[in-house]
Image 1 (tube, rainbow, N blue to C red):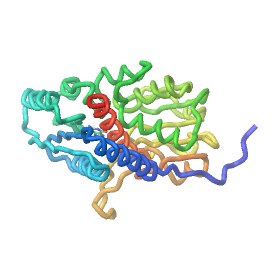
Image 2: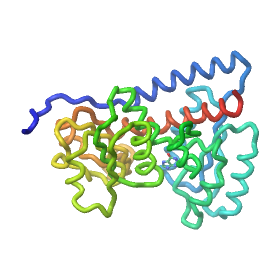
Image 3: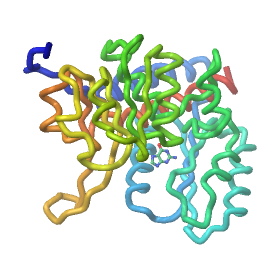
Length: 297
Ligand code: GUN
C-alpha cells in the first residue's frame, strides 16, 4: 500500500527556535546578575583568515552580545605552531574568568585537530568536541553535549517530533556531527538508528526506510526526492559554501538536500540556511551557560 501524497509540510524554523532559546538565556543572565552571580564568559580562538570561519565566528560574537555574555576573541596567524597554540589553550584552560571556549575549525593542515581538541578542558569544552564529552553522551548525566547534535535534538523536541521507536537514518558518520547525533538519538531519543557513510552501498535502500532522515555530509544535492519516504521528517545539517557571481556575497549556502523537490514529500523539513545552523549557536550558548552554572552555581 502506498500512502496518499502529502500536500502540506512544515518548514522547521531554526531561527525562531534559536531566538526563543536566546530569550530564555537572556532571562537566566538577568537572574544571575540580580543574584550577583558570574556572567557567562565565552572565549573564541580563531586561527588564520578563512572567510567562512570568520563569518561563523562573527555570528557567535553577535550571539554573545545579544544574550549579555562576556566574550573574548583570540586570533592567531595561520603560521602559529601547534605547540604555541597548545600553550594558549593551556592558558585559557587555567583562566578562572573564562567559563567556556571554542577553537574554530578548520585549523591549518600543520596542526592536529585531535591534539588541539583534546587539550581543551572538558568542563570548558562548549563545542562538546572532546572525547570525554563525546563519551558522556552515553552517561546518565552528560557534561557538555556536542553542540550541533544537541541543536538537532532540541529542534525535534521543540517541534514535538517523537523519536522513540522511529527509524532514523543518519547519512554521514563524522566525529563532530553524524556519530554523536546517532548516539544521542539512540540514548535519549530511543530511536532505531542506521548510520550511513561514504562506504555505504545503495544509500537509497536505507534512506527510503527513514521516518527521520538526517543528512550531515556536506555534499550539496546528495538527497533527492526519490530517496525520501512519503511523510518523512528531513533534517539537513549540510552547509556548503557554493561560489557564484550570481550570489549577493559571491557565494550561497547549500544543504545536502534538494529542498524544492524533497520538501513536498516530507512532513517536516529544515531549510538551509535557517534550519540547523542557528541551532548550533543556540547550543553553544546553552553549553556556555551550563559550563558557568557548573563552575559557579
Ligand atoms: N567549524 C564549523 N563548524 C564548527 C563548530 O560548530 N565549531 C567549531 N569550533 N568549528 C566549526
